[in-house]
Length: 467
Ligand code: AMP
Ligand code: ZN
Figure 1 (cartoon, rainbow, N blue to C red):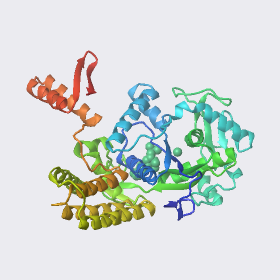
Figure 2: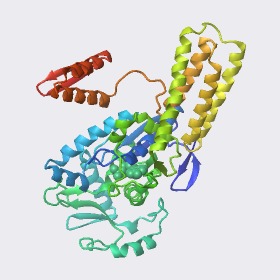
Figure 3: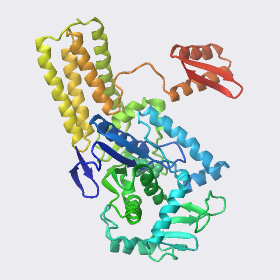
Figure 4: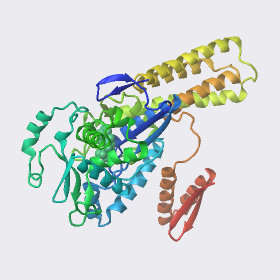
């Protein structure tokens, strides 16, 4: 298995620190709103990396944080007149629903920054003791120039950075020893959440979070650290500086970064108004279509989101699902017993498609080529299943389902509703009741009941449970 390492700018053979195990950290979202489809890209891409590692026999310890203390969260809380915690808890819950819809597995651990403040204070103290950090009036800065390897990930030169940074010296920053120094701890401002520390009541800088959570849940050295390419500098560069200066060891062996998702060939941004949340997309499409769309491109290539591409992804996904459901149908009446001689030979062809799939994935997770291999297999299945034995049809069926599962694509659709779909139907039922359309309300209740969901009308609202 070869991985493109941002640090060396080459594809390298993957050799884990510990045989058979992978320790992987993926920077998660800042939770102040519904996640957008750009945030969904690293989730889908690195979940697929994890799934392929697991398929290849590795035990993966996958850690992905939620940044739940941040200026944007505080701003949103003030806007709504609620606590920052209420905002972050709300959007973590919503984010997990979107992840479920996209079939992104929950991480082994999803740490929250606000639960790890003690560890952050410890790491900052160590950095101060070792001379890598200093306190000025309650703000602690990292002494960037003390770390010789600074810039090794982003391939930036310290002197160029300094030249670029000089003009950025603004008020409040002039207490730094050097413009390149970055914040590890900052004193609170009025109305902000804060924690006591040896330097001031305040809160941590963003970069220290990931160094600390990665160390706590994965150890001082990890195999893979990942995120979107905008995180290379300064976030990941600063994480390296903090972790390596604190622990005296190389932090991560491989650094992986996904390219950006654009909309109609323009950068996706709120100000341009070309911005979609995953939730909005889910109103129009099964989120599996979004996942399929993302995996049709290489993760290191910029990807353009457009209605046409979503439509063609939808059709392509349906082609696979139709083939699988057709195989299930044929299986019901297919002859039992041993495969024919010809079928035994054809098993070899199936193995070849699997090999093609694996070769593509082994080559820095080339999911586009892996999907192409799945389509070749689908085409083969479509032309070889009619009249075949049950054993052979089952083999074709299981192979397609399994390879799709490695990509997180559900090829065999079971009639099971997702939490978000159930909640949407409940909302629709409430609206129908309000409009005194009791026939529609009953219809929804019955539809849910048929799928094993029972509703309970309580004083606090409608509760539901699966059978
Ligand atoms: P944030 O919540 O901004 O910290 O972002 C969470 C993750 O989403 C990070 O890994 C970002 O690099 C990634 N990300 C944000 N916007 C995009 C985008 N348009 N395309 C791809 N990845 C993105
Ligand atoms: Zn991070």
